[in-house]
Length: 313
Ligand code: SF4
Image 1 (cartoon, protein in one colour):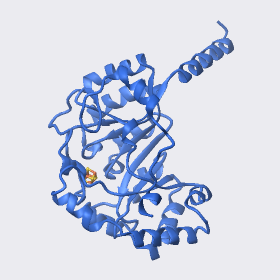
Image 2 (cartoon, protein in one colour; image 1 turned 30 degrees about the vertical axis):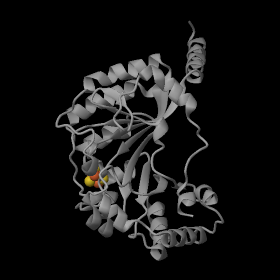
Image 3 (tube, rainbow, N blue to C red; image 1 turned 90 degrees about the horizontal axis):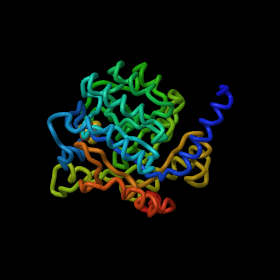
Image 4 (cartoon, rainbow, N blue to C red; image 1 turned 90 degrees about the vertical axis):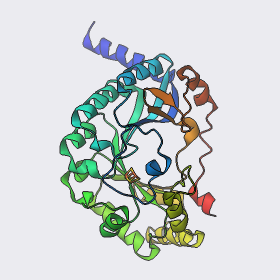
């Protein structure tokens, strides 16, 4: 077959395959070994002690899971590599195995997201492994403050990853900024604007509430309750951002800045699933039957995203 005809055949095949797929939100691959170089006072992993194990279990089954997903025409908007701790603290050899499986199945998702404490930017080989793995890669870091000293102090880490060369090389950075009392609206817009100006690969800023976790009596939950941003502070923050960027609404703010700035609630869990210990499960750790995921995809109402702006009104 001539190359042009072959390419056309492949394209039609891919198009057909894409159209018949059912798409869910995030497939979060949880690396089960809890360990982290930060000590965030709100850490949900520490609080819930979920998905917790002392060794890399079940990863021999990850390829099989992808096979079953393919067989059942399920794809995802994102594959999220998450640590229940920091993913980059795994050894390189194990991470290579996981990376290969993800790359071999890159037609089953649009974006690869890597959760990180920031540690991956200090680990060049691990960073390179994921930054070039597929075409759409984003590194997702939660911050409590734009100011590095403040962020490092509250989250108890020692090195400012924003200064690394790898941070600048990252294809895309997503910052989740926690809505806590630590954000000062009078300096925030300027600090944010400087950060964005110096780092053009920061593509998404998402403002988010911190989760309380299942154990409401825990130290972590208490910290979240004590430090949650008030409604008044939230509206001051939004007003200062709108006025700094000369915008009338939050939607406009996202578009005009060239970067996506979003205020939204945490995970859209009904359409997100987790891979942990060799099986697919929901966030309540209930095992899911892959053949039933199509029904789940059909039931999802994408229009119902709860926005933080509504939440805080
Ligand atoms: S970076 Fe994540 S895993 Fe590490 S301490 Fe903070 S919240 Fe917990």
